[in-house]
Amino acid sequence: MRNPDFSPLYRSAIGFDRLFNLLETGQNQSNGGYPPYNVELVDENLYRIAIAVAGFAESELEIIAHDNMLTIKGAHSGDATPRNYLYQGIAERNFERKFQLAEHIHIKGANLENGLLYIDLARVVPETLKPRRIAIK
Image (tube, rainbow, N blue to C red):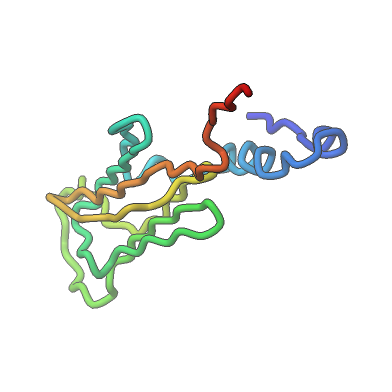
């Protein structure tokens, strides 16, 4: 698959660095779709990410938000005894899943329920950016 070169756009577009970086990094995601996840629009300004983390304890999961990037990591502790599988259809590998967040998206909280990690997000637009009516005198 061919990767496009965005360098000419950097010369003529000012202030769009994040957008171009997002396009470039979005093409290089090679986690193979593991673990599977859903992104749900709950309400006009509320979102929910659900990630299937079956087999992970709450202590083995880490959620980090930094610079509009949400990172979810899952790492099994190394003290598990080796098993002799006849067939292994359940993946037990560690993972790291990243989500680029838009401006003004805040993480409200997270909870682990029935093997699904739910992360609730909200768009909080500052008053200065909301449309306002100007009175005519």
